[in-house]
Structures are given as structure tokens and as C-alpha cells.
Length: 231
Image (cartoon, rainbow, N blue to C red; front, top):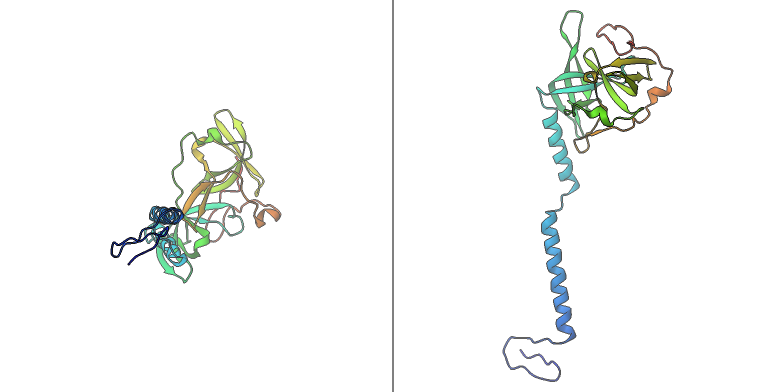
């Protein structure tokens, strides 16, 4: 094949010769294609949404497998704002999430057996990660924290120092506590959509806080609450 360029003929078979602006254009095209290939190789294959959802669900299966220890959000009157430890006994998968049969580690029935319940995943989270021993150094007045009372963790805010101890307030129950740092931990937030933890700098308002506050009951038919007691 012969290609005419600038009025000349090239007699070499099966070879095309391009000069001038045509050559520059081809070089630019090849360079852009090479750059795109490198970019795609660095990013890896593009994951479809269904694939990403499958990966998240697999992580949730691992986090909430039978035998794992988890924390349960308190939703009953007098327990709102608390987290209590439980053991996963059974897992039931739904099309979009998981349901868990749990055994509470702090609450017992009247016959002495531990209280069990089925819960949706939005009221359950894994055990929070360990925090730095000096985490309070960066916590400011009014910042959210969690306080350990008996065997549960309750939402509070920092009020200030009292010597080596810290004053915290549970506004929902209108009580204050003065405790050592060993009874406090960061206000953890668990995001199930990507299975990550973060520390809250400000607690979002909840509907329950708009209702009249009241002290947590001393006991109920199935379990006892200590979170409403001041110190």
C-alpha cells in the first residue's frame, strides 16, 4: 500500500508514513490512551453497587457472627441513652439486613436465666474499639462522653474537673456524676453502612430529648437500671 504525503510516494509495501500535524495528533492520542490505562490500572476494577453491598453484608456477618460480644442500645423507658453488652446466639438474614437473637450479660429473668431477645441490627453495634488512656486531654466542656454505671454505658456530657475526677451530666435524666477517668470513654458512633467507628464531637439531638425528662426506674420485671442515679 502506498500513502501519498506531501506529494511523494513511498514504495515500501504495507507501510504508512505520516508527517507533520498528523504525526503529532497520533502521538497525542496514544499518550492519552496510555495515561487512561495507567489510571484505570491504579484504581482497579470498578465495583458495581451490588458488589459493594455484598462486601458490606459480609463484613456485618463477621462482626455479628454467633459467639461475638456486642452492645445493645437501650430503647425502653428509663434505658434510652444506654448501651449494654450482649452475646450473639443466633443470626437471621433478611434481604437487606440481619436480625440477631441476643443474650444480655447484665440482665436476668426471675428464675436466674439471662434475658434473651431478638433485635434488628440498627439497635446493635460491635464492641467499641479501645481508646487512648489520656483521651480526656482533648475533650472540651460540653463534649459527649459515655459513663460506666454498673454494667452499662450511658450518654453524658462533660461539665468540668473536680480534682483528679470529672463531672459529667446526663441531661436526659437530670443527674450529675463525679467519676474517675477509668469510668469514662469516648462517645463512639458506629456506621453500619461501611462498618467504621468514629468519635462524636457533638451528639445529634434525639426525639426522646424533646420529651419531659425523668429518672430511670430502679428496677423492672426483667432488668435493673442504675443509670438514673446521681453520685
